[in-house]
Image 1 (cartoon, helix red, strand yellow):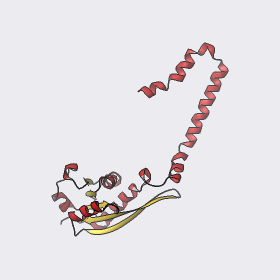
Image 2: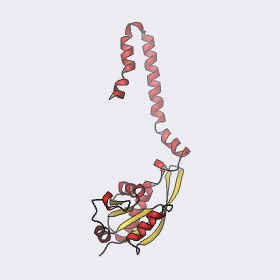
Image 3: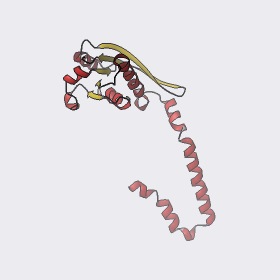
Image 4: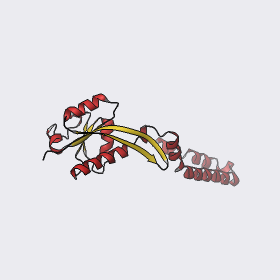
Length: 181
């Protein structure tokens, strides 16, 4: 609320100084404000593209949307049903849950206390799941393998691309555990 009020400070000062300010100064101030607004409107769509081009690595530029689509596609290709559960470290599983069109449940960080909405371990076995870990996280991979040693093992590679700019290519260790029929 405070920042909204501070935006009115220049207008308040202008109104208080109205007898001291000429119409010509007010017109110039209006022209300058309009010019800055137009410059910002023109730059607004350009800035994210330049930012991505200069820093396409990690953070908001990581291929989270792409890994979610790929894991969902892999599940659909094998079982022709919606992806029910995603297992893995929070940093991967949360993005898959968010970006997957199926919006699966998340079993986060291999801790039932962090995922009380899942009937652990029965629901994982009954519905099946897709698990994903970064290859540089051996503890995550070991915990994923311990859930179902017979799960299908894959290495999935995804790359984020915005326009003609390619970002990081990231690899994930993936485990697909089928539902119990």
